[in-house]
Image 1: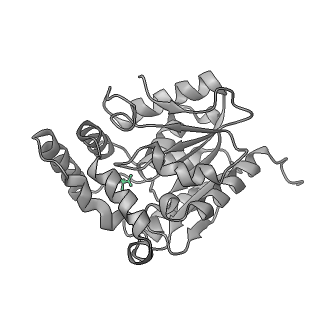
Image 2: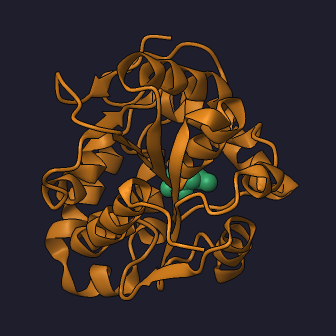
Length: 260
Ligand code: MLT
């Protein structure tokens, strides 16, 4: 699968791969990347988003494309994703666990969709395929936390602009792919003990629950990092705090193991 990858020509060390949320693209990481000077970062656009064409269906085929990119460029990577990006990070961990030097799961969950949520996704995909436009704008309130909506009109305007221009074929691909994803709780539990891991949640996220985050954290043997005053799009709303958490994850990958 030809996917669009944003990365320096030469990667100095194990890269940090950042996977974006739905229905955005890798620009959602701009603020985080600015704050992560010195970390080699690879950003990837999901099929139908940014510069990536839509190809095969399924988060799994996208995950395999990410695996190929990492193998070609670096061998191993710290793989981090927010929401849909987290679903993809878990699919990467399932497809190629040996490639995972560390994992970051932000505003996401390991479980599959309940039936009602799955049906809602398929209905949105069908509506967009039938020509309906502007459906993504209705997601604004769920994506951005209350504090940001009240006090940060610039952030709200940026997210609204992304939602207004969300590509139809990307929405259809992503909703059908997310609807079909399985529960990957067992994938997390099967990763090696002590694998550097981050589970992060904005305290105002209304789309993913504390219980979702706690379950992933428990499977990975870590605590939940909370970003106060952020909603679902913590990386857009509070990029400095999210960058600090990702830098800490990245540094744990390169640090020597503590003495026993
Ligand atoms: C996202 O932010 O990527 C979406 O909320 C994921 C989803 O619809 O489950």
